[in-house]
Length: 417
Image (cartoon, rainbow, N blue to C red; front, side, top):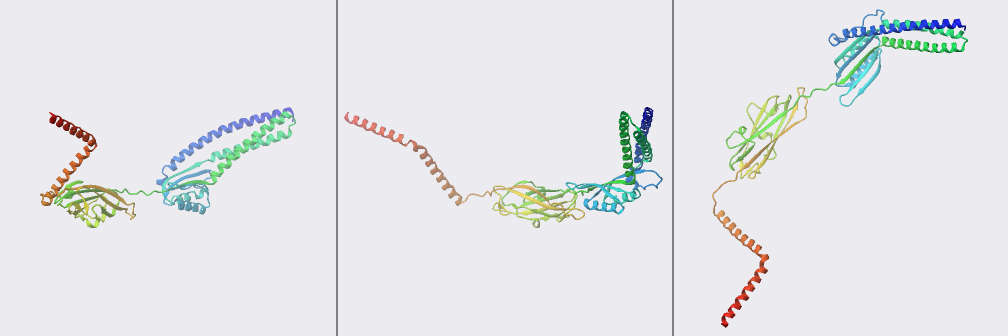
């Protein structure tokens, strides 16, 4: 290739570089405009998606539009809902693009589907019914201007590449050939990048994208609560006005009062009262008028009473003269409105009973017993004294021997005189 040809090729490449700069600037403007249009369309179509239902796909007006949607549902069976969603998409000629599933704790799965734009509305409507719809967002992005721009830039790049190939085929100068080859490689790379962008855009236009999130629904468990209160009183007193600690005469009956209050949101059934110390169960108690133990509704209160005699310091066969700790237990089964039985409730309440010993005048037996006890006490005292002096017996014996010897000597002296 002559020097004039190389200069012409250089001028041609400079002109094409300027065209590329113009095209790049126009791409920035188009992309910015496309983003703004996308934001406007998202505001119009996504804000009231749940209220307005699934939007219809507009008629084909020769525009290139990318349809995307996000749907979130809740259901009791995540696996079954996912299988149903896959079946829906397959029936519409689409396919599953990706799936992410978690089974621990609260199960969920996220599926991404691809469908033809004409099936977009139908797919949205059917997928929204695989569970309870929680969230929905729909977006339509018009990329017609971007597609036109990419096609134009591809055509220009193809012409530029072909011209450089012609110049390269005629080049004879080594430096000129090297420069043309470098520039041709850059132009071919740019051409492939533009073609890749157009293919990606076409794929998004030709197939709408729907992301479906399915989460396991957790049924709210009603709150359950029951309160047990217990009191006792002696004689004719009302036990429901009694005390948790009681000292009673040995000949008085003891009354017990049990108050049960349902503070939960469920019905209490199978209510049972019992105590190992008093040896009674639910069948032994008397229920106050207007209340029942078989079924206690939320907010209701039931009262039951029990009367037990004290005999020889014992109540229900248990010795109470030294004090008796009484533990009263309550158990009940909460049942929801649908008839579902929840975990059994259990409560306990503690009482303390002390029966005073009987105070009677002493008789002959008591006097005899008292005398004998006095003799035993004296004997015990003597033994204690002997025991205390026993270690000192040798000293005492020596002292006595010395005293006896001294007395004999004194008597002998008195006789001689």
